Amino acid sequence: METSSYQLRRSELEQYFDRTAVDDWAKLTSDKPVSRVRATVRAGRDRIRATLLSYLPADLRGLRVLDAGCGTGALAVEAARRGASVVAIDLSPTLVNLARERTPKDLGAGSIDFRASDMLDPSLGRFDWVVAMDSLIHYDAPDMAEMIARLSSCADRGMAFTFAPRTPLLNLIWLVGKAFPRSDRSPALEPISERNLRERLAAHPAMKGITVGRSERINTPFYKSQAMELVRP
Ligand SMILES: C[S@@+](CC[C@H](N)C(=O)[O-])C[C@H]1O[C@@H](n2cnc3c(N)ncnc32)[C@H](O)[C@@H]1O
Image (cartoon, rainbow, N blue to C red; front, side):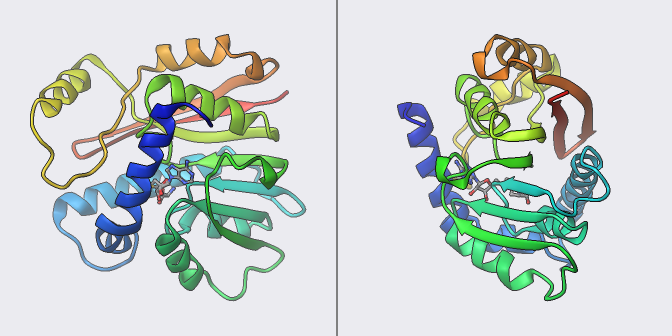
């Protein structure tokens, strides 16, 4: 994608997920003991991953799935265990290597092709399903809507993704947070209200014929995320 906001944010995220946060991210996504706060984040993420996977058919044999922004690969592994041929792509070569190392040898009928690159790379081709868990949440609303439109337009059946929900209370917390410098240099979240997101998607020409299906919000003190399903009837 060509916008300067997208390219700037993408390079910040690559720096963050490939260097600054690699060790934290590896630990959070492992079974290793973590602080109580991080344990609630881990539990929330497990729930939202299960929700996204519940939007896909139970039997994925013979189907192509794109895990866009796969991180350490947990969702890709679950999809492959159900028989999917998964392309799992992430900006961070370090996380992709870790994902590869963590992948069980026996995936039955499924497979995973790991790549370190941009999820919007047009050479990836077409898929039956696209999933994007917490990988669009750092992009501003126009870029995020454009990314969803591009990703869902290469999905023949549907897409399942998360966004950071913006509610009046969360908006207040977000605005207060923005007034302070972030100590961990993590890229800011870009919360968006469900209504704003739906309006942007409905207005996008590439979303013609694609409808919003199920949606579910997880709202725990330290992890807030909303899953959404897009379907092509
Ligand atoms: C919060 S992590 C989530 C990782 C994984 N989906 C999970 O839930 O464990 C966001 C991931 O999205 C990746 N990402 C962000 N923008 C991307 C892009 N344009 N192309 C590929 N990966 C991207 C980041 O590198 C990072 O690993």
